[in-house]
Image (cartoon, rainbow, N blue to C red):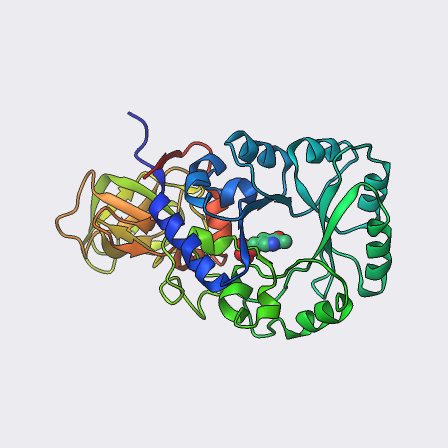
Length: 364
Ligand SMILES: Cc1ncc(COP(=O)(O)O)c(C=O)c1O
């Protein structure tokens, strides 16, 4: 028998979340962002649910090839563009649209021999200072690209640093609007947070939105809002089972470092899930977990292959009881990944991407 830990990808939830994004996007088209192997869910597993999107966006050429291999004939966008000249051959062959964020990528396009002119998204650094042309270089980049026979159509794009937080997006949208003001072409600005929080404004929605995390059911701005506020459903469940039960007397401790000490007699369950499965070791006593759908808490330190949970609120539980580390229990109860991520001092994105290769993944 394999260990009982399983990651389940919920196609119904992914479809629901895409629909939610589409409603927020109104008349804008929706890229389904599937970078990092669909945020850890697996491109092949999410493809069917997301084929109602208008396009797929990712970073890796190999991931773009996988989406084409699944039969997708619509738009695919490489969010970081190409890394070397020969990548452009694949872009030509697979009709990939690509971001251009640096002069070197324009040089590569100029050197690329192709019969098929490319669609590119010229990226402005409007304040995040990650990728993109600085404001004063943007027009020159546009002029260079426009003059290339290798380029068929130029669209414009930027990315927000604070769409999920207090600073917001106004400082960046002002820059984007000013720098691209009279340039003809489609526009793309929004990630999930911008789409859910700021897209009442048609100029912010633009022509294409680029939600990632919301598609997978995590709130982009937790704890200000949670997945329920945004009407998102968990795209993934990480579940396992109780593989052992211990009865503790007052003063007994649990696990490495004796981090938890019982102040009364209690029953604990030992669960087949540890940090080698991708469950964060930083989660401490009190981190929420569901046993047979009932909310209880982690106890003590997470070890490589096991962790312990308090069975006090679940008196009928025992060996084999279902444990939901995050996601949806068999009875429908939900533990949102954002709560677990918060307990680990991180975000839902990191947890879903970190589920390890030894965990079997199934589709539901
Ligand atoms: C350029 C770009 N667009 C869109 C996204 C999707 O962002 P999110 O997952 O926050 O919706 C990302 C993710 O980091 C990104 O880098």
